[in-house]
Image (tube, rainbow, N blue to C red; front, top):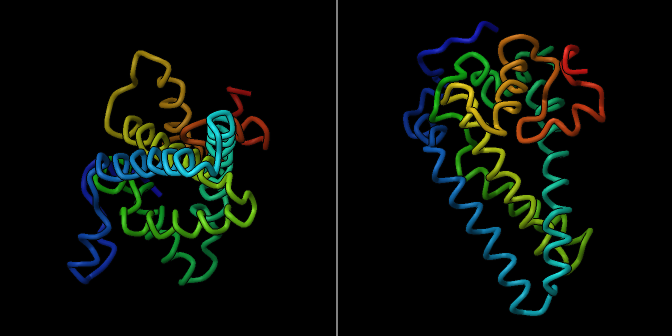
Length: 202
């Protein structure tokens, strides 16, 4: 799909649904950083976790997020579109972003949807980690906020002259050269591990 530097896809005919698909990037970033801080604070104050556990499980959650980000991007957002239904789902979730990568209002999932996903993740990871869930999910949500920030910088600005430059190049390769490599946005870690680094980078 050829990217369009201007314009915006129309995803729904219903104007309310259509409006809900757009959000300013500052809103979800702020929401999830505040929720992450709140979870750590709650876990510490109510003695579910101590400070060392909070730090350790926070970073574990952050690493888990980078894997979830990679897997979702590679296998869900780039799913095979061999049926009209799958093609529609893929376009709504991600295809429109490849067609209009400069649409700043669609660089993040709507907060309502994101919060629903975050709630599900909390209960899933509570089953896996018990009381340490407050650290793990805080790390996951912080990782998501970082992902949103990096993703926005890549699409909204010219290549930065700092550590973000390599991430900018990495994600730009995915969009403008080869959409079957460079699935990691906030980190190329899993591209290295799972063999989807761009050939020149390898």
